[in-house]
Length: 84
Image (cartoon, rainbow, N blue to C red; front, side, top):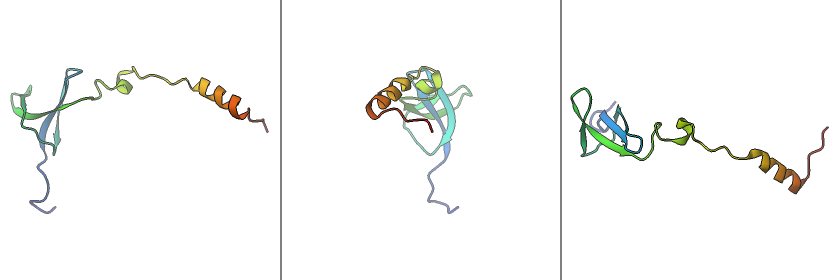
């Protein structure tokens, strides 16, 4: 790699305030805000709107679409396909 052209890849805390969830990872993202982590070190913190702790897909609260109603409406509109 060429030196001097890549952004710094350093530890950062991503925090989901809605779910009261945070995790420490490495990223090139930066922030002026800091937080003291459980290891006693201070890291930049980036607040996110949604994470795996609050996303409906991962929490199991995702809504399921009524696909049976869609199929029936399609068949009424365009006719049922004949078996071969």
